[in-house]
Image (cartoon, rainbow over all chains, first blue to last red; front, top):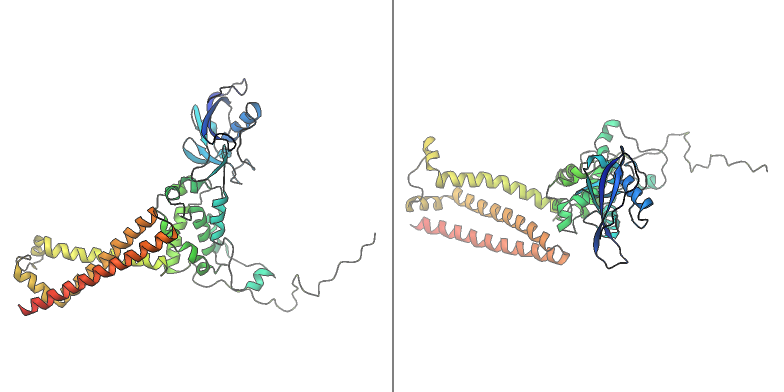
Length: 279
Length: 124
């Protein structure tokens, strides 16, 4: 059940790291396993997991990539709260650190959640610019310009890492799997609020539904869990308002017109061809 | 109909219920409040008072509005709760249809009762 070991002899604070493990090739049950580690200053929970993996149990599975709170890969439950392991200092957590996989997700192994459901919901809200000038989107000739003031209307919601911590925290997600969830809904609003986007009506069939924005119970747990301050609960309320009153930017996105005479496009025949190789 | 329109109507019905229930409570249960404004018109639960209200087109109109808004508000909320318990597509359709049928049936019955009461009151 429990294996106790010390990671290394050092001057750090002794901390018990308890991990709830699941082996898909085993008996299918979840078991707890504990290790004693020396928590050094600056040590994150991800560092602690690496220490265990390197020195005690190489079979311990967890997901990570950037180790700096940018990629969102290492989301897990740490002392009862969904957090990024690379962004959580062991010294903040007391003498016992309990780690388990994200709830509201299937578990692939140990601390690795299956994020396929999150990404399916994310894709369902069409998280990209939807515009009337399709030809320009397909073969752009120049940028879709936007003022810094217009960008402020949505930039907070564009910080989403897709780490799925908000879905793990959401009580509605726990009881109603059909609920789209805070991550997808916040991303829907991120594009609806973008002045370059005209896709509110295209997204409406997905988000304007009982299991879309109207499934939210306003618990606010998603906003509390978000490591990047995206505030999905706010985005959901703003999306409700947009669905009733229209997108926050009343004017449709400006269509990119033809280039003035004399400008070249990447497809223009006037672009000289590369010279023949000399070697 | 899009869910956002149903939800907007839910909010509108909530505001309307505040006004209509406020009027109902003031007229029927807070006679002392009406007295403060010098508007008390005798025992509100007396037979003559009930007949007078039933004869009034405005009062009958308010009864219909109160019935309609209360039914919509209550059934929309009940539908939301039930659809979280049974969230399959089929269950959602069945619950929505049942709410519409039940709401319409009760509304028609209530309007008929209000109209009949008005007709009888006019004869007395």
